[in-house]
Image (tube, rainbow, N blue to C red):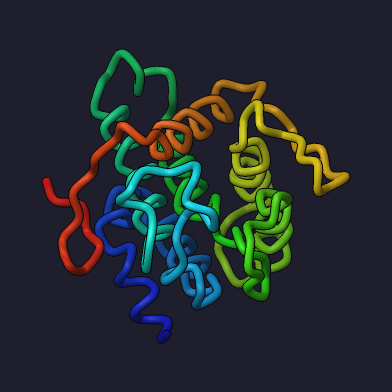
Length: 196
C-alpha cells in the first residue's frame, strides 16, 4: 500500500485535527502503519466488536468509528470545554494510532495483547520523523497505553497494561470502548468512510 493511500484512508479524520503541525505529523505516523492495518478485522476472533469492524478493513473502520465518537463528543461544549484545542487534537491523533500495531509490527494471526505498548514504542522510535515535541509524544503515548481500560491483563501474556487514570486516558478509552460495542451500527461507504 502506498503512503498516499494510507494517508487518504484517514483523510476525513485527519481533517478533524486543527493544528497544522499536528496534522502533518499525524500523516507521517499514519504513513508508517503496517500495510495489514488497513485490511485486517478489528477482532481476530470476531467476538469483541460490532459487525462493521469485522472482515476486510474492519480495524480501519473500528478506528474511524472511535475517532468519530471523539469528534462528536468534542462538538458538545459540556464535554469539550474540559480540554484545550491542542489536547483535543492530540487525542484524535492517539485514537487514529491506538490500534496501529494490533497484530504486531509484523502481522501475527491473532491480536497482540501488548499492542498498546508496541505502538507507543513505535511512535517514540519514529518521533524524529514528526514535528511533535517530546511532551506531545508523551501525551499521545500516555493516552494510548491505557486504551484497553480494565482489560489490562491476559492469561497469555505477562504484560500488565496501565489502566486509565487521567481524564485524557479515560476519554480515549471511552471512545475506543464505545466503538467496540456490538449494539453500535455505523454505516460505511465502499471506501470505508463513515456515512453521515
